[in-house]
Length: 168
Image (cartoon, rainbow, N blue to C red; front, top):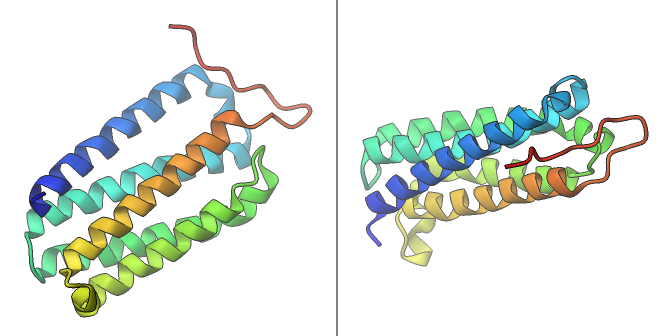
C-alpha cells in the first residue's frame, strides 16, 4: 500500500473512532463528574486524537525525510508522552487498572519521537522513517483499543455510577 494512502485511511479511521467515543460519552455523562474517571476518559480521547493528527501531518509532509512530518511527530509524541505519564497515577486509582497499557503507550510515544528525530533508524529493516512511524502508530491505536476495552468492560468500584451504553 502506498504510504500516503495508508495515512489518509489511518487518519480518517482515528477521527471516526473519536466520533464513536464522543457518542459513548454522551450516553455516560457521569464519567465526567469524577476527576479520576474524567482523566481516564481524556486518556482515551487523546489516544485517538493524537495519532489522527500525526496521520494528517504525515500526509502534508509527504514521504522521505520531510521536516514537516518529523517536527510534528516529535511535538505530538511529546504531548502524548507527557499526558500519558500524567495519567499513569490515575490509571491505578480509577475503575480500571490500565497502567500496563499506559506504560506501553509511553514507550510507543518515546519511540515515535526518536524516529522523528532520527528517521534513518529504519534503514536496517529497509524501511523509511515514515514507514516505521506508521507501524508505531498502528501499535498506538492498538493501545487505544486496549484502553477503550478495559474502560468499557470494567466493573465499577463500589459507590461509583455504573457505565451504561445508551439504548439504540
